[in-house]
Image: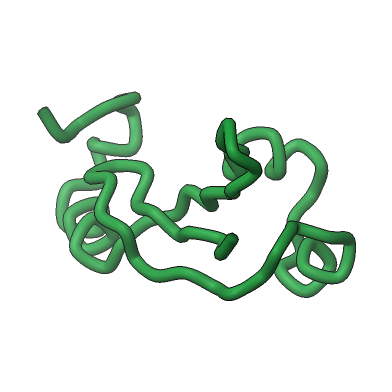
Length: 76
């Protein structure tokens, strides 16, 4: 199953990688700490993984309105 990349704000799927699992090489290449793994990588019921990141549109919104950083969920 591929690893999905999804925006953690608007939930738009950004892309996917054709890996079967998230291994130590993947985590080292992306420089993900154990704390970040817990926060940003979600494993599904069928063994799929989703990496929560930020899409370009949400990044632009955060740069335009930096007060959004203080909100847990700013897209309704």
